[in-house]
Image (cartoon, rainbow, N blue to C red; front, side, top):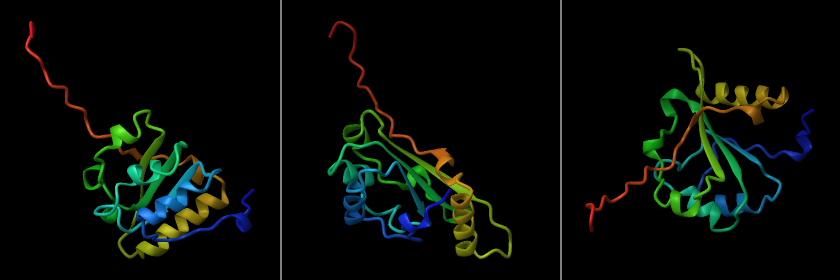
Length: 143
């Protein structure tokens, strides 16, 4: 059952440091679905911003059509290993199929609405955005 009176859906939110501060105050939040969010590619490092205010686990689902979907190489992931070593925040991209004459805004909104109405939205997972690799410095033997 979907209790829409307790949900606040924002389409295309501006994801900046203020946004993550506000998200960190939502103590019961387990899954955050960002649909066509702005400022993901060049904006704040959201793990750094989120974990500066709390230490709770969070699943983040970045929903978009393929043409506009953010890729792991486009996200600011510096310090992810430092601020989230136990990987409490999982980040996934979920790509919505788009047909030739579809309106991207309407398609994304419809997918989210249908997923919420059927109660499946919270279980969606897509491609995981990994932490950046850690490169170990090799020390010659006997050093």
